Length: 468
Image (cartoon, rainbow, N blue to C red; front, side):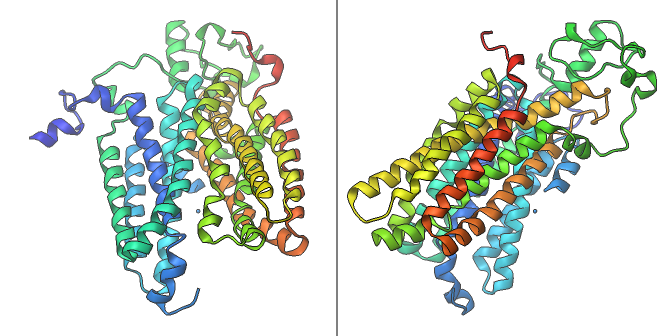
């Protein structure tokens, strides 16, 4: 009987227990952020463990657009969100009990599948929950959760493994999954909660439908969703041929994801995401080896050197809120431009003394702060691009709900591409040309991303209501 009052049931007239809190924006934000934290934590926690456990357990010395497509066609996001958690639990189980290379590879592959689900569906869920004027702030918290996971996972897993062994590490991971299960089960989507509560802030195609009804032109399709009904464009075919009556309730045969890729803003945002991931992960294959050879640091020091790089990302929510106010163009372009001198100056770290160590930490902190200016606004830009395309295209072209999951699947692909290329690129440059070449080669990429951000990301500067 208690379960019936705890979980929403189809056709039930009685609201679930604590529905107001479980469907609140902040609870959904905490749930999605926790899901991102868990996904990244479980992925990063095995990094310091597997190299040491591999010999003992095996005797050997030491993927996303698809999920977005289906998520946009499922009524409720909670279902694929929970499926992602089940896949993650299965992957963790395989890594825990696996005693062969094939099983461990399968476990890591399942972690990748889970990440595709969690990121795509989770970000789309946040977009549907938060007003577009607060999406940047919400994405800032997601970035904060990711940074916390990256910072704490290798450290905690390394300590637990060194003191307790292999299985206690996975005991910690399964405990984290249990907390994630609780939050995901308790979370109630707003589409479900609307049966009992009134959320009076429709967005996108829902806002467009309401606007049409209120202005008594329901028989004529609107041009696209608008946050201000009074600014609905004219629907006279002679004034706007694309809104001809033949388009009413008709969806384009071209998949929404293809239509989105025709947007220069989206392409620019995806390029910025790829470069952000590339710049960040290029240090994974270069920085530990560099400090080991130059400063004679152990693996502990090689891990702690990432602290100056990660700590500035804690400013993500503040930067996201600023992008909500001023748009993504300025913070994104500023971040890439700011990274250029810090990257170039990495070449001046050349010998072993305290001043050089302080210089390296300062430069890494500057690069980390620059990347924090880019990450949240770029993620939020994906939402703003979808909304802009829905306003531009005939009503219903991109589907009744908006292709948010598909758009964020493209973001995930771009970011994953950067994380794949980054370590390879950094390692190749360092091996062939040395540490100084790593800095200036990344600086060139950051400079190119600055130009792309100024030209393509966000609305033109003249359209921004700076003083409003």
